[in-house]
Amino acid sequence: MSTDVERAAHAYCPRCHPDPKPGEVLTALCGAKHPYFGRRERPLHQCPACVRLASAPVYACGHPGG
Image 1 (cartoon, rainbow, N blue to C red):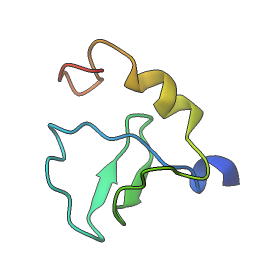
Image 2 (image 1 turned 60 degrees about the vertical axis):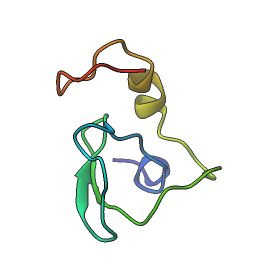
Image 3 (image 1 turned 120 degrees about the horizontal axis):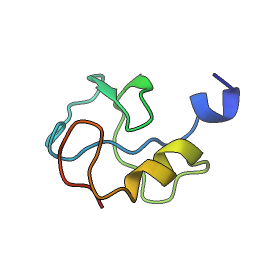
Image 4 (image 1 turned 45 degrees about the vertical axis):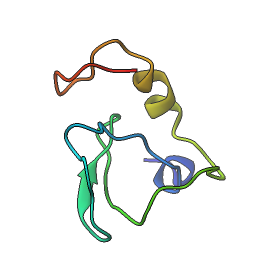
């Protein structure tokens, strides 16, 4: 995994993770697992895979997408 993706702001399914707590490990839409540190309104970087997957009609988890 590249450093850009490692430091990227990932997208998460809001139904799988409705109220994440700080430090809770979440699985992003791209499959990366990272501790949650809060939502960022304007992240410095965005994970390109998550950006693409966030627009899918159905996420991999089976929940309706964006």
